[in-house]
Image (cartoon, rainbow, N blue to C red; front, side, top):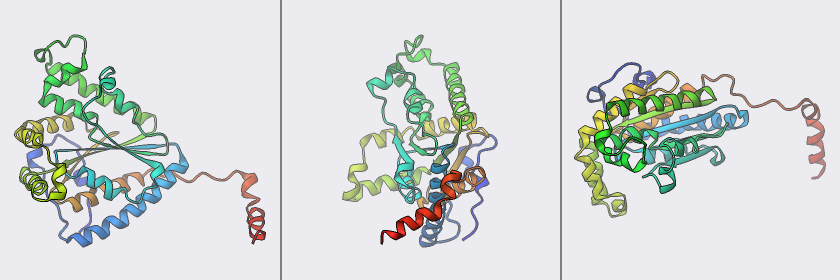
Length: 293
C-alpha cells in the first residue's frame, strides 16, 4: 500500500471541487485498508487517553458531505478504539423551536468539547451556509431583524455568515480547541449507486427518504455552495480537508491518518506527573495491596 500523503487533501489555496478527485484506493484491496485503519485507530485511541489525562486541549472534528457520503460509518470505524468517556458525537438536524430562539451558532457552542475530550459534529455549523443557501427560505424561520423575505437575503448576508463562522472558529482555537474539518467528496454516480443499494436491500430501506431524490436534483447548487464555503473558511487554525469518498475504506484511512499526524504535533500533550508525595510512596502503596493476598 502506498503511503498516505496527508498534505494532498489540505485546502491551502482556492480549489475547484470538480477538479478534485472523488476516488482513492491506494492501489490495494479492502483487507489491507482495514488493517491499516486498525493500526492507526489504535494509536489515535492511545492519544485520546493522554489528551483526556492532560486536560488542556479539546478536539472538534467536523464532517460534511452529501447524503450517502459515509459520515456515519466513518465515525463508527475511525473512532472505534476511543474511550467512550472522551468522545461525543452530535448530529445536527433541523433546528428545534428552542434553537431557533437563539442565534444559529448557539446550538454548536453548547456542543463544543470540554477540555480533554473530542466532539464530532456529524453535519455542522456549515449547514447554515449550505442547506440554507440552497433553500434561503429556511432563513426566515430564524426570525432575524431586518430579514422579512427571501429578497432581503443578499450576498452581504452570506459574507457576514462566513465572517461569523471564521470568528467563531478563531475564538475557540485561541482557547484550546483543535479543529479538523473534513469534506467527504462524493461523485454523483457513486451517490446514485448508494441510494439504489438502500432501495434494493431490505435492511437498508429505513435509511432512504424521498427527500434524498429531491435534494439530489440540486446537486450542482450544493457543490457550488460547498466550494464557496470551503474556499472562504479554510484557515491555518481551522483547515478544510477534501477527502475522496467514493471508496469508504480509503476515506477512513485518510481521515484517521490526518488526525494522527496532526495531533502528534502537539508535543506538550503528556500524562500529568504524580504529586511528589504520591510518587515517592508508590512502592509502599503497592506493598499494602500485595499484603492483602
